[in-house]
Image 1 (cartoon, rainbow, N blue to C red):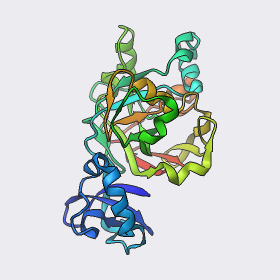
Image 2 (cartoon, helix red, strand yellow; image 1 turned 90 degrees about the vertical axis):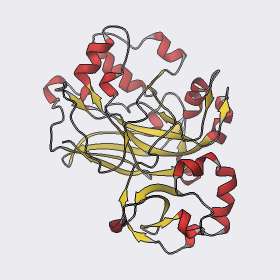
Image 3 (cartoon, rainbow, N blue to C red; image 1 turned 135 degrees about the vertical axis):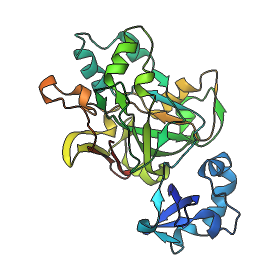
Image 4 (cartoon, rainbow, N blue to C red; image 1 turned 120 degrees about the vertical axis):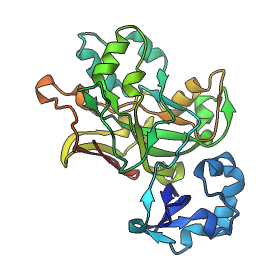
Length: 302
């Protein structure tokens, strides 16, 4: 299933399912038995999923075409957002810039930072250049959406806690990021202004047949103004989402709707490119991130 949050022609924000290139309003189609907010659905997935199946919502005629609605971030107000660094090539490429190697500790534990869960935006949302940056960058990532509350979750049982996946763009002000990280903290302000997710959340059963190693055999690409900047594959990931969830839940509770980011795929940002090929994002640029089966996440810089 592919879950979305959308604005209907009346401007109302609703939760829905993508069906036959259209959108089914879950609340309307269930006569009010399903919530109109996707986060509320996630909080009671085990109760609501049988209802979705019993009502055959995937067989219903869409309430709207995609042209009649405006897709939002699938989760408008996630409880938290942790972003990891799970792709070795990205870490290695970033370290080359500072004439250093991947630290031993990176191979010992999956590491993450907390980002601003109040700055989540969706497909086609404009991304404003932060006032104090001249080095705006994108990051091509996957996000895992937690679907069940849990603490001290083992990696081998973590699949039971995953609701689904979506594309994630961890917008980055590189000059702000580098300045604060020299102090020994961060990234923080360099990532504080916006994170895009979408266009939908796909449930894990939809991509199970593509599982390969610790990831999935699904191609990842990034384009700027129609020109491909990078490509990679989810199966290049060093740490599985199960291992990330185990680390994140160690001694703390994860809640439905929490976002776990994979970190950038190798070569998945401008900052990894050779200096002579770097061109930081400017107003008017259109960035498109695509992951097979997960769709295309597009935003324009303003």
